[in-house]
Length: 336
Image (cartoon, rainbow, N blue to C red):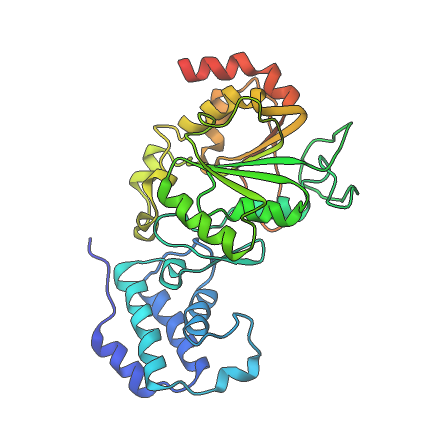
């Protein structure tokens, strides 16, 4: 069934009638709701979505002073916003792609349709420095209620791997959190790594974050040993891929689809993880809605399913000892 689209006449009426920033944010909220725009790619409500479109168009900070909301728009500014809103509704293009901007870990990142739009709850783990398993950048143990296991030999991660890095946002956030750590960021997609390179340079992290084209562990040297491996890999199963909202179809399928049960890549990662973790290392992987498939396929594995204060689920952690303990089981799952 064809989805409703906003008409040129409706947009023209807005251009002729509306005046202030407040007016256009309100109009955007109404239009996004009226035409059933799907959220969940960086924003969770229509007000935030409309505000981002308006304020970014005007080169204003997203948390601009409320007094500026009564400022008037120039005709050219009105047209620029309404053109973006038209594409957001009629083409179902996500706002982050329209603006080439997404926020993660409180920092701005360049994004386009070569990469997934950042939205992982892993940001909260990074903010808490993976406490209580890891020490922070000052060698101190922070506090966090997230179900990460306790570590009898906690240390600050010295070498970190972000696998399936996409835009590079997780790797760069890790570099901010652990400024003395070496961070490797891998992806199978050359296109994604080009975007990651833009972001590492923008954040001046090109000397701390090393980008590598690799299909999971295939091109990572065997001698590389990581204190922490973090991954937000493709994990959408076949059924969910078939039902994706139109907005999500703008994202690269390579960054989403992961086979019938969503675990094609995760199985391979777990089968090799023990070979690349240090003695007391930790691996953290996001599997989203495929959490149920993990629990069904690996019902003998005592995963640490993590909790988040700001919402989110489907992320687990395993210690290096657990990866070694269940290595044969993980290898069997790949060969099955």
